[in-house]
Structures are given as structure tokens and as C-alpha cells.
Length: 311
Image 1 (tube, helix red, strand yellow):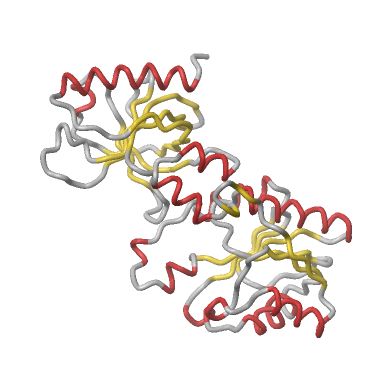
Image 2 (spheres, helix red, strand yellow; image 1 turned 60 degrees about the vertical axis):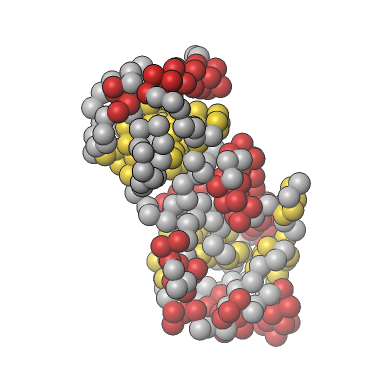
């Protein structure tokens, strides 16, 4: 997949385009992307995705530190490429760009710069200044320019159309398995291993404390999870806790992310680790003492091994 930063692109033949944020690149997005690739194949064009960075909500929000997304830009690139996208155009988003109207965007950017002859859009896609652009805007532009377009229906779930919002809510509510179903893959988080209080080691379960690499990457809700971890290309099994450690912390502090890797005792401080969330096992609990906590951790390990498989 070729990645372009900006709109100075030459040598493309009849790009077939879709546009959006594609946060998480979930099953709803996959349906749109699959159709995009099919249309490109049928018309002899090239499948192209146009996206924006940073996330428009972060640029326009008065409280950007409170906004979180499902996929970093690098993760988004990997997922889009895996679905057969040949060209990814990343437009730098700022307040000046946010003032471009939907019609201006279609005529000046999509057609004028990218020479798009075919546009595919999701069923509820909105774009342009204040999100006023919709399917009617696209129809009017197509009528005046000759651009072809297609509306692609979303993928329905029990909660409604699959969306990034539904998935974020599921992750925060502790419904990990449901979130993974809507994503079409297991949610993951990348971070750096940092030093901690070493309480896990005292309990017989040494843990690696994780500092997320991207401050806007969503962290699932508090609880204990069965996970897989990728460290320097090695796949390891483990159990991970997200929470405030109420048994040992008498006053609420900063939420921590700690993973205990099974059958692993190497020093990985400062190294990058990727956590793949497979199952959520239980809520965070307050235990009467550290002995009770250690006993529960032994049970958690047993359950995690069963869930992850003992091979």
C-alpha cells in the first residue's frame, strides 16, 4: 500500500475512493472497503482511502485530553492494507481545513486534486464544514461533474449499525468479547514497560507495568483480562489488570495497567509490548488482605490458561 501525506499525487488511473476516519477499521468499515476493492477491480481503477490526521474531534474539541480512539494511525495503516487498499491519502487536519464546505471538498479536493471518478460512501457518512455534507451533497456533485457514486449499507448488530462509538462503549463497559466481535479482531494496545512498586513480585506474580505509547488510545474498562502479549516478536500468554489496586492502595490514585506473563522472567523494562485482549475474566475487587488477593490471582491464572489454551 502506498501512503501519501497530502494531495500532490500523480500517475493514478481512475482512483475509486472512499473517505472517513475509519477508527478501529471494524466490520462495518470492512464491508465498505470490500465493496471499494470490488468496484475498483470491476472498473479497472485503483482502490483509495482518504482519511484525516489528527482526528478532527481532537483538533476541534475544547477538551481533547478526554477524547480516545480505537486505532492509532499506524494500526489503521496495517488494517487498511490487510483489506486490499492500494492507496492511502492522509490529509493533515487543522482548523483551517475544517472550514472547507462539503461541496468545496468534493469539487476541489476529491475531483480537482485526486481526479476521483467513483466515490463510495457509508450509509450515514457526513463530511465538510460542521458535518453538513451528506448523500444529497454527493448526488448533486455527481450530477454536475459526472462522478459516479455508490451508497454502501452498514452492517447491523443487535445494538444497531456497527460503529466506532458502539465499540468504544462496549470496551469501557467491560463487554470485551462483544467489542471484539464488532471489530472482527481482538482489540490491542501498545505501550512501553515501565517500573512499578513491585507488589506483584511480592505476591508471587511479577507484573510489567505498561505506559501506553499513544495517550489518546482507548484503554478498556477496569478489570482482569486474559491476554496475549507480543514482546520483540515473541508471543506470550498472560493475565492483565486494569484498575486502581484497591487492596494495596488505600487512597484512589492513577489507574494502572499491569500484565503478568506466564512462564516468563526476563527483564523487559523500557521495551515495547503489544497487548492483545482476548477475554475479560472479572471485575476489579477489594480483598481483605494481600493473601486473599494472591489466592485470587492464582485462580485468575488458572482461568486465563484455560481460556487461552494450554498449547
